[in-house]
Image (cartoon, rainbow, N blue to C red; front, side, top):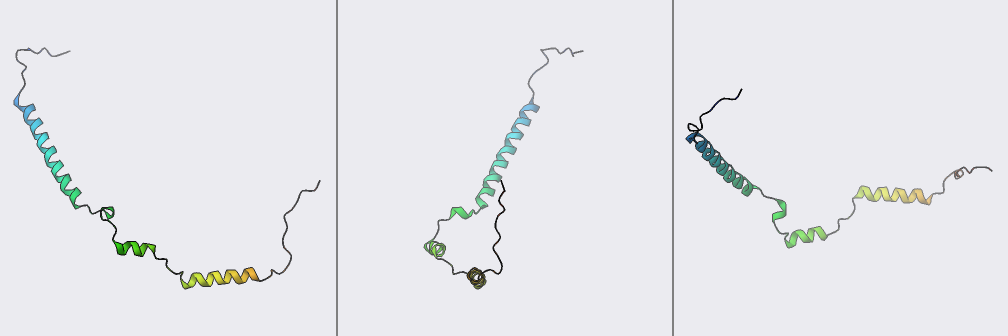
Length: 94
């Protein structure tokens, strides 16, 4: 059952216009707020590298003392002959 509406009585009103204007105003305020928040962002990529930071990146750091000790222990193990026989891989018999 559809309502019978007289087309002479149906007209645009002030309410939809005010709602549309209110939504447009809210969107403008949200856009301005978003711009303000984006200006606050300080990304690390925004700044160009300085000569000092480039030099620091290029310098090679010496290995830590613990790394040297581990490398020396590996070398000593490699120099020692292993006790016992060397295991061989099993081969299939024909």
